[in-house]
Image 1 (cartoon, rainbow, N blue to C red):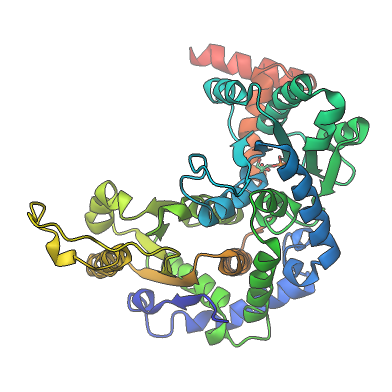
Image 2 (cartoon, rainbow, N blue to C red):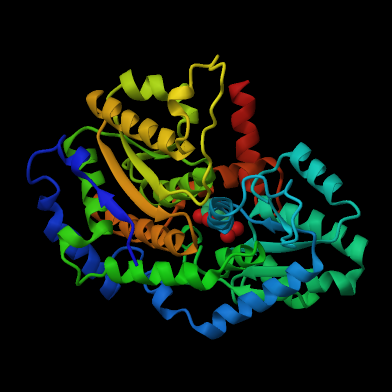
Length: 453
Ligand SMILES: O=P(O)(O)OC[C@H]1O[C@](O)(CO)[C@@H](O)[C@@H]1O
């Protein structure tokens, strides 16, 4: 079986000869600190050996629950935000049919919908309207069990599900994925008798896609979670601490992006794809790197573009804007379908030169042309090529990025596993909403707003 492949040559050409190699000993130290649990944030290292520790019994429990949901639901709403939904959405959209909700086949795949990741009244109102009269289930995912966006959505959906199906029937199709002991989601699941899965204490949200957080929704969508774990497990081996620096893709990716950041003035990394199905892989990656590295006034800003779509909006900026960016392109070597470009006698569009070619050949030339143009425009380019878009390689990709993120954050000198900065908006929102327990903050924020009037 092939592995995903990392090409850093078009990035190292912007750096001094030994710039990446000079990180070897620091990377080794970071790897050892991760392995020995001696790094900052060492209480959140449960993801590190997750793929190799997953048992068949654990996967079976998830698959069995997915069977129940699939058999009883036309639609399943995954309620979660950040790491509690992005991984599942990324994998489901990468592997699924782009028009799944319109495709009328016999696969019996329920529609997987996502909510709890915003507080848009229109979004929730339109969702609850769509679900009226439908047999739907809910997977409520929240590690803390108290995240406002998710909790608010779950209350709405649970009430609707119980009203439509009756309390007993609803119990079959409402599942909680949360902490083993704490938080409102745990208390509610235990009291109501909902099936529940545990998010391990030592796995943070953005590293949780290979736990039930990602695996249950992915299994509900009809994908093979064993193969995802197989891919992740092989990548765990390929990026292990014993693997030589120059053969370890996560080590090289981490070192290259840090070298570009600290030695080449790059401030923004743009993750890019040439397959629209990878849009949410970009969103997942943004959270992984953004929450892990953006702290202590440091960190590359993680951005994402979908190509060629965004070449017609962001292409100008990337080609000629401030030279503070580099690109990391996820390239899929072989598409899953074949579509040949047809002949046209009139050739009014002048496209007969493409006759008989696969659409992907045009896409690949767009990709190569973009790479050459952007490198000419002084944008370093990292390329990750993925042999095929399937469960196995998505598993590899996930673990590759997670491992690189842990190493990269440690190279940057921060704790990659906390996210203290996200609390600031929550505190203000609770104060503004007069949440019980926030009386002093409410008073202070109102005084501040009065002064600013
Ligand atoms: O699973 P929870 O606790 O609802 O958190 C969801 C997301 O919110 C954050 O905690 C940020 O507030 C993320 O780190 C996390 O992935």
